[in-house]
Length: 151
Image (cartoon, rainbow, N blue to C red; front, side):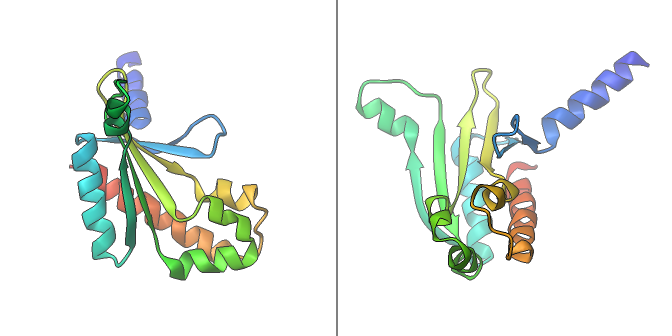
């Protein structure tokens, strides 16, 4: 019985999105390499009409200065239809918009996708008049990133 409980606990911990210790960051395990994860996410986002603004390869940048960094890439993306109303409520949210997803490989070789929890951004910028927008963004991120990391 203890093994079943432990197995269920591990399954939940390694497949469900996890907010990291109140930092406002959600991390989801991926079944793919860092580049493949972001390739999949890019394809999914563009198919939904979401703009890809940039992709940054942090490991390649580190290599240029003689340092080694495990695979780490950042995808910057957004939808002005959702982001603009948030900026109309509080312009400083532009520090965190467009949205970002960081695909990275941990020390054990596991790949993760991390992103800012929209509810954290809501609180951080004190936006209280755009709950439906935050709910839509939250649902979309969970669904789209979930699809990108799953087999």
